Structure formats: structure tokens, C-alpha cells
Length: 80
Image (cartoon, rainbow, N blue to C red; front, side, top):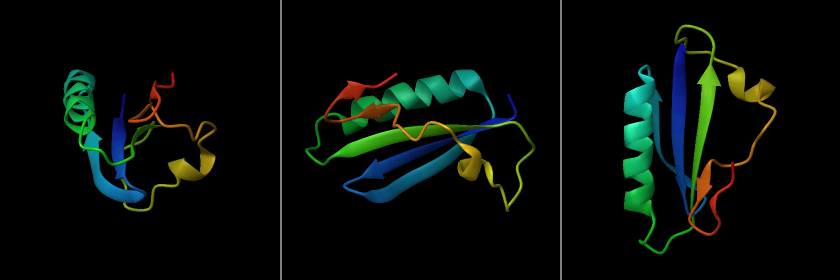
């Protein structure tokens, strides 16, 4: 794994975007993020995007993503 970008969208706005280079840390923080976002009342979506390259400022991976569904939403729970 080169790295993963975890994005949290709250009420349609980007709340936080974090890059993870350790898969264990990613899963721990994703679990904590879901727990924190569950009950605050705003519609929330959590997305992750895998990158197969070293971090660069002009990454175009989102343009090539095939699945634009969130990993988790406050309305539906897990979608995967």
C-alpha cells in the first residue's frame, strides 16, 4: 500500500482529509471517526481512496476512481 486518503464530508462540506501510510492506523482511525460521527445529527459520509504511487501534489487518482460511493454514511451505515 502506498497510501490511502480518508475524507470526511459533513453536511456536504469537506470536514477533514487525511493521508494514511499504515493500514492498521487507517482502520483504527476509520473506526474512531465513524464512532465520533454517528450521533451528531448532521448527514455525514466517509470516503477512502487508495493510491498506488508516492505522495505527489498533483495526484489525479480521483479522476480514475470507478466507485464513488461512500464507505460509510450516517443515514445508511456501511455500503460495502
